[in-house]
Amino acid sequence: MANASHSGGPDPEAEARNRSRSLADRIAEAKRDTLVSEASANFRQREMTGMGRAFRFAAEFVAAILVGAGIGYGIDLLLGTRPWAMIVLLLLGFAAGVLNVMRAAAELNADASVGTASEGALPDDDDD
Amino acid sequence: MSEKAIEPIHQFNIVKYFTFGNFGGNGTEGSGFEIAFTNSALFMLLTLLTISAFLILSTRGRGLVPGRMQLMAEMVYEFVANMVRSSAGTEGMRFFPFVFSLFMFILVANFFGMVPYFFTVTSHIIVTAFLAVLVFLVVVIYGFMRNGLSFLKLFVPPGIPWFIIWLVVPIEIISFLSRPLSHSLRLWGNMLAGHIVLKVFGGMVVALLGAGAWGVVAILPFGMAVALTGLEFLVAALQAFVFAVLTCVYLNDAIHPGH
Image (cartoon, rainbow over all chains, first blue to last red; front, side):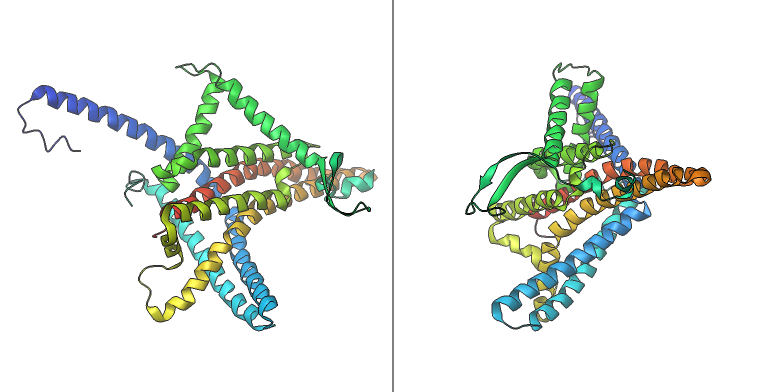
């Protein structure tokens, strides 16, 4: 992409070298991208099976509620405030469960759109 | 014998082969902590030996043009490396050995479970919970090591007004703490449920075959068992992949907590 803007330079040898290097880069990049997208598309399509998705959401949701209730119970035991911390943290756990499910759904949706569009999402690995 | 065939939980029994001895306790029966070599331990050991043998033997030639076995090993490597790179960034590659070990262990253990009469290591929650807690501790410890206290920014999403923040932070903390639970529940639940269902349909075939003329109907659960076996192979590979991908996603949080 960068070599087009430098074409005004008078050194044809450097330009050729530059071009061949960028060609090699592009080949390597294309190879890597096809490997990634092949492998992940292969698996992601299968992850789209209804049962897998359902199990993922169920686990995310239940886990947060259980953790919330558990923490609340622990606080109750420590402070002797029998039902209150557990009630509050159970509700917070419920909210966290909804948050988890929302995040998981967003992730799966993003994966699905990467699988179909497959452009733009892959090259920017390390700049954020 | 027929009783054993219809009991679908029997396959998860832990059998002690020999014991290394009793630690702690006061000498009376049942006290202390017994460390025994069980069938679970045997299959973990077999898993490790299989992985080691596969990787060592297949990469022994180190040919520039890989043979079949070397190609397989390289493909597994590339697959996991790309997964780590795309989910956790280039910096996540320092955790490549960790993710690769987890992936291979779960994959091979799951596939071992598909062999008849073999024990499924990952169908016990203590195993999957240990793996998930290991990932969790790596994330927490590395997160604090790399980012210091700014790792806690993970719990404070940007752009939240101050009067909601006190509600959002506990929710984020619970969400974070629930990760090892859901991480382990998913793998364990899939393996346990799959193997129980397989055994139930297998048991139905046996029971129907023993019922005289009704034995003809046995073809129905038999077909189901065949289909489910295929599905279970898929689930075995898929759950290993999902476990590894989520490990990468969690590691990404440790490396870039600012999201």
